[in-house]
View 1: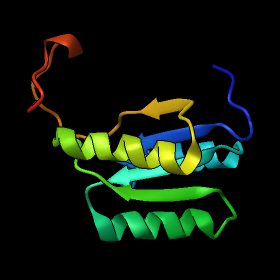
View 2 (view 1 turned 30 degrees about the vertical axis):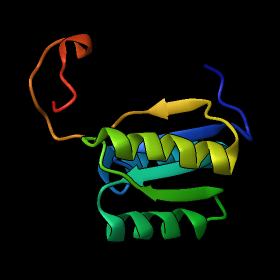
View 3 (view 1 turned 180 degrees about the horizontal axis):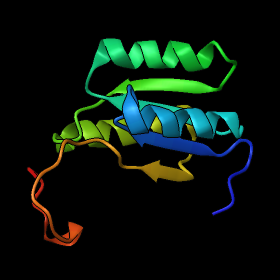
View 4 (view 1 turned 180 degrees about the vertical axis):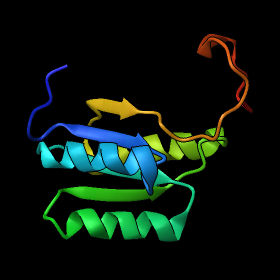
Length: 107
């Protein structure tokens, strides 16, 4: 996928670690980045850090283990940005190993 200025990326687990690093790299490439994470205070700190570098960044508290919360994230991103060009489903802390299609929603 070619990353271009003006595209919209949603990154889950974006308040720290790999998710924050990915969001930072995408913002530096000119993408609008929507940060999603379950940790509200860390999420706001991450948003402020990227916004401080003039990145186009938004934050949304979301627990990806909750299907309704993920649906709300999708609605909020479309309402704010009009589209999603890239979704990075980074959130999570391990779990059962195996193909994604064999996973259950609670996994």
